[in-house]
Length: 392
Ligand code: TGC
Ligand code: FAD
Image (cartoon, rainbow, N blue to C red; front, side):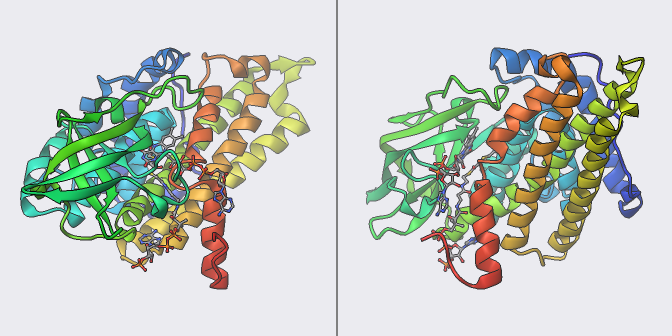
């Protein structure tokens, strides 16, 4: 990729709403992304390899467990700092943000919230430092948008649970040290189990042939009579609400992350349009390109306000799941539209790996699908405002 010249837009002076700590956290992440992610990400995406060497840096900027208390190795930050971290990391690449989201919101969060003290002490510090990588197994081959139908199940046998079933589309699965796996007990109640790499009968084959999130490793989780020690069950909460509450945290992070992608596409398109001469003048001086750029900054600004307000509500413990759905859906769609428009501003150059836009655009096809699809989030809003369930 060409040199990373990113300058963040702040059209409504939103920086003045941020605390000194927010700005410090954000700026540290921003410079780490410029220094560590931008120079290598195109090659990793082209080769479909996960840049494992970035794990240490992610831990150092506080991206693993930003809001987990420091006693467990987390960064002890608030929800806006968490959001800003996701924004900056996703500005570099959605796949790298995925690694941080899964680790923080889908692995550390349930262990912190629903785990025993022994589980917290065993896993959280190692996950925070990046010594352990985790993954989250909810989706199954036949149950994506409707996880309540899952068939992965376990039964008791002496000091163990015997786990059988399969999960698919699992970020970080191929190299994860521990998987938070959601499975049904014999009565059909959903529980979380901590399944460690190396347990007999547990496999994590990688999913290849993706055109999206190519710098993130995705895989399956296969369980064949896996003996999981009883102390590996998360004791604090059961039922579908447990995994869905983890999704709330990850979806919130994505609402911020998508802004990072949109800012990167806008900034690239603006710079290119000012430099690219056609018909003897910069294309930025034409009305059609100005329409694209003006609409981009308008949508980014609206998305920033939405995310910031949601962050305030989250800090106050007042953000509802439906509000989070609205922000995830709006901001990812906003970023996807901006990526398409920005790609066109660059003409043919826009399809090359010399610029980040096409990679972002392809990544967003996953982001708009995972953590609840665009349509599922619309139905969540629909149910919230009408009181009527249109899923079933
Ligand atoms: P429903 O009957 O509505 O709810 C079941 C129970 O859960 C409660 N609940 C929630 N609790 C906490 N947070 C939420 N967001 C919640 N939403 C619902 C609900 O109150 C109920 O509790 P209780 O006590 O009455 O039992 O469940 P449903 O089966 O009708 O499904 C609802 C639906 C469709 C919204 C839900 O299943 C859904 O969100 N589906 C989308 C699935 C999804 O998002 N999967 C994501 C997999 S993980 C992933 O994609 C990671 S990508 C990571 C990366 O790389 O970044
Ligand atoms: P489906 O549920 O089959 O949906 C197909 C289409 O039907 C969608 O457009 C959907 O909106 C629509 N649809 C479904 N139900 C309805 C309805 N009631 N009304 C109207 N339309 C409907 N999962 C994990 O558990 N852990 C992970 O780490 C993880 N990482 C992922 C990484 C990647 C790269 C990808 C692509 C996915 C990942 N997922 C993960 C899975 C992801 O959450 C699912 O793909 C997603 O929830 C959608 O499920 P599905 O793919 O089975 O689509």
